Image (cartoon, rainbow, N blue to C red; front, side):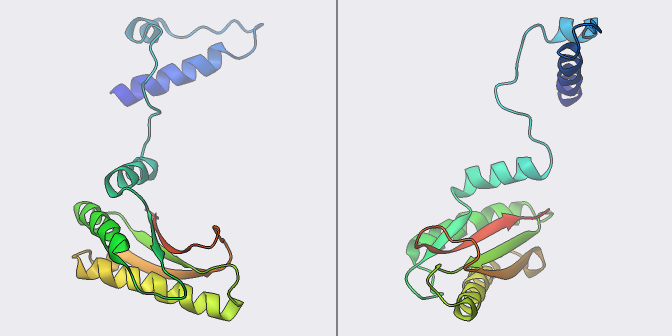
Length: 158
């Protein structure tokens, strides 16, 4: 009900802000229910709301690897434990784990190490109780470098 009121109020505001010649006014019911109020935070619906909740509860969607390795260190395992707990509570969510390599790697090596990183994260999440059907792993290689950080990113797909 509140979402509908906010949606109606938003639509009314857009219409009211339109052409000055049209003199379109917001419906009186909206003005009485929401007199000059604004939501504290933007209204998030669907996958955007899930992504925001995932980021809040997990702390981050990214784990980092040391050097040229697919081995997960202690900080990465702690992050993945939080991600696994969230994913177990949301079995309807499908996740893609993207493995990334450093920009200095050759293309073939970057794709291979990215795949091993993504698979290492997927395998650990499965060991932590996340259903394998909920997860997929893909290598991004060196196509989207972020500094010198070798990483894997957990992306909520749907």
